[in-house]
Amino acid sequence: MGMSIDVRVAQNGRMVLPRAVRKALGMTDGGTVVVSIEGDEIMLSSIRQSVRHAQELYRQHVKSDMTSDDFIAERRAEAERDKRA
Image 1 (cartoon, rainbow, N blue to C red):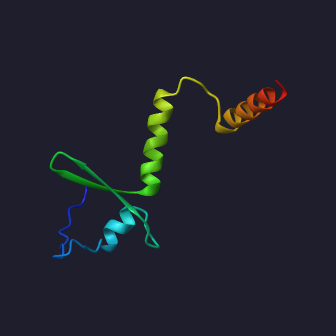
Image 2: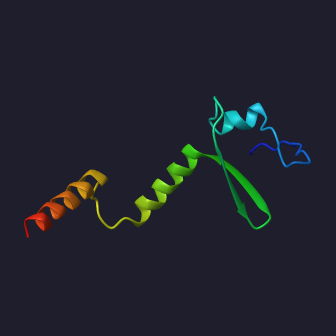
Image 3: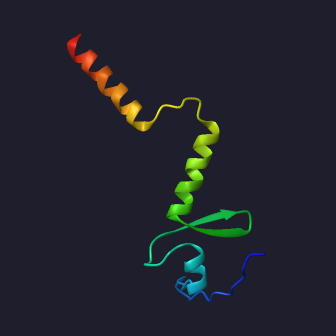
């Protein structure tokens, strides 16, 4: 089961994330939190978690096993061919 912690929100909207929450998000030295709102629920995740999630979604839908290095090399070769033409 997950954890549930009450966090006080100041009048100006600021709040302090408790140590347990920062630890769960892997935030040891501060950082940025991504806030997602779905219906009437709010989810917090670290940038690292958000990037990992985006990569997983990409892998589910990718139709080619071309790497970004392959893509860049292909674009450079194409630009070189265009120069010569």
